[in-house]
Image 1 (cartoon, one colour):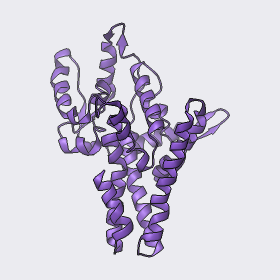
Image 2 (tube, rainbow, N blue to C red; image 1 turned 90 degrees about the horizontal axis):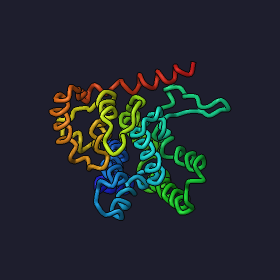
Image 3 (cartoon, rainbow, N blue to C red; image 1 turned 180 degrees about the vertical axis):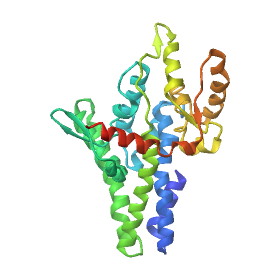
Image 4 (cartoon, helix red, strand yellow; image 1 turned 90 degrees about the vertical axis):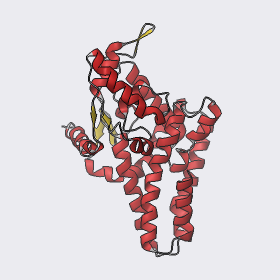
Length: 296
C-alpha cells in the first residue's frame, strides 16, 4: 500500500524527467496487481483477520486500484463454489475473465491481439458490464460505491497526471500506456491460468471427497512452490493447488503447505505437480489462441 501511494505521489507531483516517469509507471503497474492480489484476495476469503470488518477494509485494495471489490468477491467465490461442486465451468469462464462478444447464439472469443488492452477492459469496462448483467443481485449501495471509486480512479490516473506532471503531455500519455501494459502482462499471467473442468464435488456427505482432491492434484500445477519471495510477491497466485485445497488460509503459509502436500501425496499414490515459474510463460498465449481458434 505504501509503495502504491508513494509511487503515485512521486509520479504525479515530483517527477522531473521522462526516465523517472517511465520507471515509476512500471512500478505503479506492478502495484496495480500485487496490492489486491496480496491483500484483497486474502480478505475476500476471510484470510486476513478473524474480524470481518478488517477483511472488508482490506478488500478496498481492489477499489483503489481500479477494480471493484463487490463484483470481484461475487465472481471469485462463485468460481470456488463451482470448483468445489463439480461444475463444468472453469474458474476463468465463471469469473468473466475472457474478452468475448455476445450474440443471439451465445458468446464468441475475440482475437488474441485485443488482450493488449486487457487491463483497460478490466478497469474501465468489465465491472460495468457485470453490474448491468447481474443488476438484480447488486444492492443499491454497491452501485454508488462503483461509481464513486471509478470516478476517483479516473481522476487520479486520467486527469491529475496531465494537470500536475511537469512534462510534455505525450510523455505522460506514453507513461500511462506503459503502466497499463505492465498491468495487462501481470493480469494475464495471474488471472488466465487455464484449469480443467471438475468432475467431482469437494464434499461427499460429511466427509471430504477424495476424488475431488485427486482432481485438484491432477488438474493444477504449483509454480516454484519453494520460492517464498515469489509467493509473497504474487500473493500465492503461483500456488493453485494449495489455494484450492486451503482457500481460507492466508497465502503467507502457502510455501509450508506446499511442502506438506508434496511429501504427503506420494504416500497415497498421488502426484503433486510443480514446475518452475519460467515454465508459465507461453501457457497463456497458447490458451488464448486455442479458445480463439475454437470459434471455428
